Image (cartoon, rainbow, N blue to C red):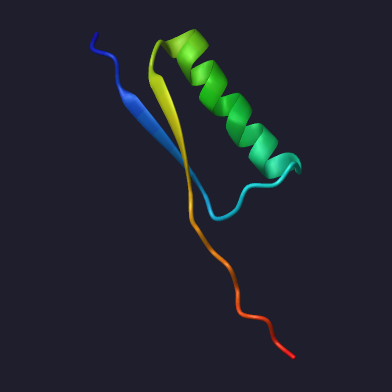
Length: 50
């Protein structure tokens, strides 16, 4: 079977549970399934509200 590229999208990157779980999914996608993983994030800076 051909290797697939699987993208994981997150609006922001933090060191909290959601992004850690996403990293784990991406890592095991490569280890167990033999696919290539990429993690995509957005360059998002919300405006400051005063």
